[in-house]
Image (cartoon, rainbow, N blue to C red; front, side, top):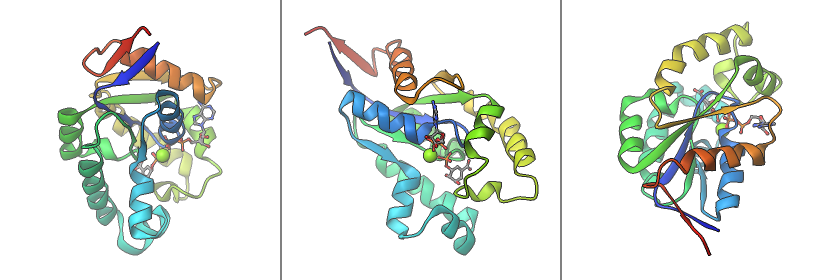
Length: 183
Ligand SMILES: Nc1ncnc2c1ncn2[C@@H]1O[C@H](COP(=O)(O)OP(=O)(O)O)[C@@H](O)[C@H]1O
Ligand SMILES: O=C(O)C1=C[C@@H](OP(=O)(O)O)[C@@H](O)[C@H](O)C1
Ligand SMILES: [Mg+2]
């Protein structure tokens, strides 16, 4: 069985949902290019995300993020993992809807927290009470993430390759995106 992607699949959702890890596994499984907007921003700036936030601020980062998404979404039939804030901007949602298909990787707050709690790579969580900050961001964003074309729920103990399979199952409901050919 061969699977062919006709549109670029854009993974959206909270920090720690697994967009980067699942996106990479999904691209390997489907033999298509993998892109991550954060990695692309870091590479172009030759700085890490925390360094960009510290030196140039969040607004600067969001502007770079929009540019990178608009550019990368033009690659047909690839996987594009975005940063957790990307889908919040209407302009980003529009280009994603126009040229790709959005998949919300949805995970429970406790799962997200367990995955990000010991990491220093997410500047938005550098607050006095990072768990409260994550909770606040989560509740604010969920209604926007719900605008995605597809939603895939992540169970805390589901391994990354199985999450990638779940995404494929969800994509099978969209023949305009995924073509399954019996060999
Ligand atoms: N399904 C999963 N099972 C176990 N660990 C996971 C899973 N998804 C993500 N992780 C881990 O959680 C952390 C955050 O994942 P990441 O892909 O960076 O999330 P995001 O890009 O959505 O912020 C990483 O250490 C990743 O390996
Ligand atoms: O949620 C957010 O606003 C952010 C999420 C991060 O990406 P991940 O969702 O891949 O962690 C990164 O883009 C930046 O730290 C801001
Ligand atoms: Mg990521």
